[in-house]
Amino acid sequence: MSLAHQYRRLLLAYPRAYRRERGPEILGLLLDSAPPGRTRPTLREAADLVRGGLRCRLGRPASRTVGVWAVLTALICGLFTAALAARLAWETSRPQPDRAEFTAVFTEAFPGHRLSDDVSTAPALFVYYNQPLRLSQWRGLVLGDGGEYQEGSASGSASGPMPTPPDRTLTTAVRRLEADGWQVSEPTSTVLRTCDAASCRQAGEPVETVLVARRGDTVLRATFNDPDTYGSYLSVEVQRTTPPAVVPAAALAGLVGGALAWLAFGWASRRTDGRRGVPLLLGITLVLWWTPAVLATPSLVGHHLDEPHPSWHPLWEWLGQPALSLFFLVGLAGAATLSTIALVPRREPHPLTLSPG
Amino acid sequence: MTQMREPTFLILTSLAGGPRHGYGITQEVATLSAGRVSLLPGTLYTALDRLTAQRLVEPDREEVVDGRLRRYYRLTAAGLDALTVETGRLRQLATVAETRLRALRPRTA
Image 1 (cartoon, helix red, strand yellow):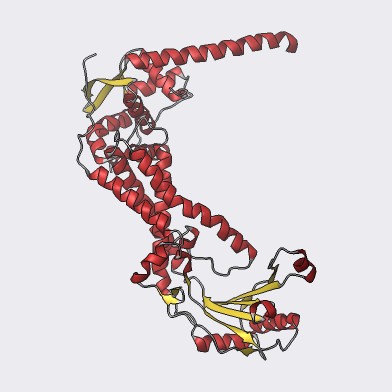
Image 2 (tube, rainbow over the protein chains, first blue to last red; image 1 turned 45 degrees about the vertical axis):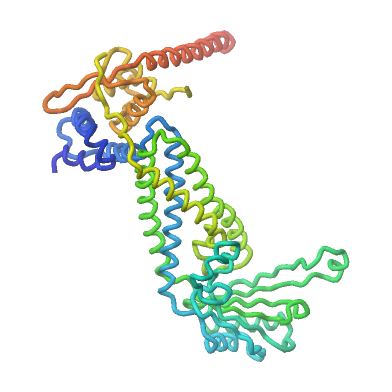
């Protein structure tokens, strides 16, 4: 392949219309600058052309901030695409544990403890108020209750008095779980603030101890509580971990989504250059998309640091979705409006014209 | 106008000597900076697009040499003004620095 041909391939980073107008000129400069005997572009040249082409795709050559806006757009769109792919890849998971599986795990970990009859199981991998999500529930999902959409689980609690002291119950559970192949994390204890009065502090606040263990694609979370406050001294939850397909699917979709968003941003940016209100609308859209992520991420980081998580919370929860899906949807309307403005035909910017000096 | 970056200053300076095509600009910039600044084509055309949008530079003429298209660029009146202002700013900074250095030398000698 000739050097000129290789340079032409690198020039594909530039938009087609720009290549048509300036391609021969840039190619001429590249060939003029190449020392004799060069057979292929240097890495520095290639990186420079790709960078120049990606910048050129954004249009607005005099703007110093368009690149920042493009990065913010591509990043959040990539994350949304990755979250969608992650949700789809979750379908490769086994169903959430049923009553029989839950009972077997409970009995295995807590022998001698009586499981109450009200074991609840999840009818779907992800549930909304412990029911499969239905289209008719969109109003609740969008208007404030989106946080109720979460991974389903089988859960239940012990009934009656604790047959052994708490420390012994915990030690026995850890020993038995490890013997049965569970990876058990160090139990964590938190003092719960149930009231602010001085008398409460004197009496001693209840302590919550959490034991988390994982075996294969299943996670067990046992919480030891004050029975006077919570009705049971032990509640147990068993659910599936993130399936192996989720991370690669999300990473791939994120890259593709981000790249497509960059191209779409560039297309819209070039076609809306000089149109009033477009930067403001883009700013509003990005604020609506980024705000839920900025609010959700620190809180989830804190949550993850507080207790062991063999399986991370799903990506969409880190993006504040669907808890703040109203923000996302209004932002989507903003993006659709921007695309519509870009689609409206306009007079093409003046091609590079020569004028006598 | 925001403060001019060095490659932009050098491109405008190279065009102050008369219209030049892309290759001519890169050669002149290398000469002006004593080889310190070497503009690659992607960077040069990003800068030329920006300067054209800011109306500091405009296309002058085209010619084909050995089958290769060369488009010449020239400074506009606004480009000349911008270069003059920036040159004055750099001269003033250099003068201040020289004054301080002259005052410093007797003490350090």
